[in-house]
Image (cartoon, rainbow, N blue to C red):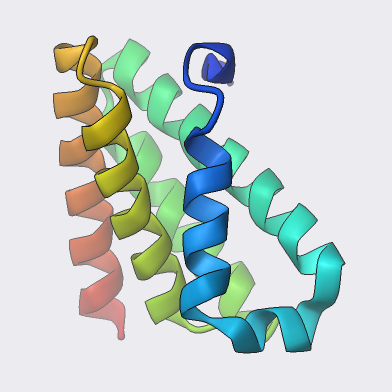
Length: 123
C-alpha cells in the first residue's frame, strides 16, 4: 500500500475529524478519546487507499476497501451513514486543500463519489 503524503497538507486530517465529531457528538460519548484516535487512523487508511488507487489507476481498489470497511464498522456499532459522511467530508477537504494537484484531486473525488454511491446502494 502506498502512503499518502500528509506533510504537504498538515491540517487535512484534523479538519475532517473535528467536523465529524462536531456533527456527531454522540460518537465521543460512545467511543471517547480512543474513538478519535481510531477515526484518525481510519482516515489515514482512507487516504492511503485513495493514493494507491490513484497511482495504480485502479478505482476498484478504493471502492472494494470502502465496502469492506463499511462491513467492519457496522459490525462495531457504526452506521453506513457515518462512513458516507466521512467520505463527503474528505471530498470537501481535498477540494479546499489540494487545488495545487488537480489530477490527484479529480481522481480522488471520482473514487470517493463511486464509493459513496456503492455504500448508498447497500443501505
